[in-house]
Amino acid sequence: MVDSPDGLWEVVAASRDVMSDFPDDRSWAFGVTNRRKSRRYRQSYTRCGQFLANVADFDNTFFGIAPSETLDLQ
Image (cartoon, rainbow, N blue to C red):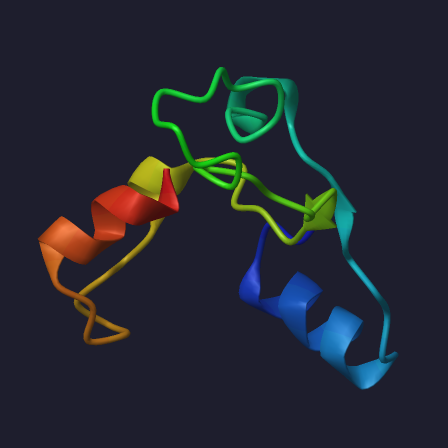
């Protein structure tokens, strides 16, 4: 996990992979009951990714991301 700018630099400089399984509180995409006739509704093949430990600390304005789009990060 990266928790500081220096930590990020260490990960980048070492070409480290920081991918992990979905956190328990974000595994919403798995086991979801289909609400439509389509079998592919909300179906996901992704089992891991890179995650922010505290989305509330994300500075969307720094990255030019609208507040409404930031909600999708949660």
